[in-house]
Amino acid sequence: MREWGLSLVGLHEEEIRALAENYPELNFELSYNMRPDQLETMAPILEHRVVSLHATCPRSRYFPNFASDNPCILTQGMDDIRRSIVTAKRYHASIMVLHPGYLCEEGMPSDKSARLSLLSKPLFQEHVAVREGSICDRKYPESDAYRKAMDRLTSHIGMVCRLCWNEGISLAIENLNPRSGYLCMTPDDFAQLATVDHMCFCLDIGHLWVSHFAFGFDFLEAVRGMLATRKVVSCHVHANPSDGHIWEDSHGDLDVNAAFPLQEALGAIVAEPVNCILETLSHPEHNIRIFQRFVQAS
Image 1 (tube, rainbow, N blue to C red):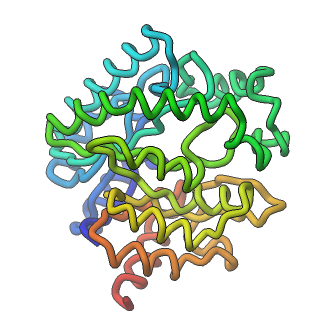
Image 2 (tube, rainbow, N blue to C red):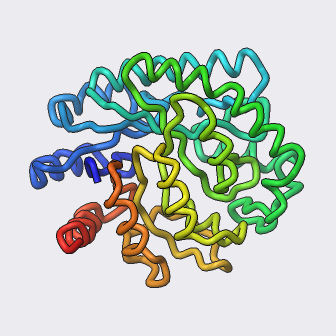
């Protein structure tokens, strides 16, 4: 393990202040939902303790969609990446985590309700297996539309990698949960993306846990496989209650699911020179203690 820290995605300002004071060794990942004024207000607390940011940061109306062929959407995405680079350099962050693209020509709304509304359109419904959460069926990543979208993404994302690399920042593409309309969910997807120059990965073990039920691959084998690419620079560490019947990407506490092989996954991850970012949405001190106990025992 290189660095470890906590994502700010589920935290309020007072919680962040208290955690920064109580855990002087704790680093942070800036969140895609942070406003410019929040970034300025928090600067004295977070200075020199930010190891990564989750683009776009500051927040934008849309997540970038580099699987689109719409020049306006690609330009908008590049502009948001440039703004995120400014933030990364302001906070001395060396890694930018990105959800890079979606199965549409439009931008993907960052607002959850607007995003779910878009994902309810017929384009995304063909491969829905579980209505709640728009969980996709096993054939979705093999569909013609999905493969074409992944090819567009692979073609376009190189320019983003180069832009970040030239600024001293590693662009880390994150594996997503199995929602119809999303991309970058399977080991095969990341084998394809690994061919792009200057490409790095963010391994999200909570997302991978849900996806392994949806697509039938071995979870721990996929963890080891992604690490074996030597392109993983950061890991999002969280758990969920998914079991093949429950489909929930809750970003829950690390001990929320006794069946989730947390120790085995973390054992493989902390042995590699990668960052570990706790991306749990509640009980930060509880999860920090669990993680610290594991690291101390390993």
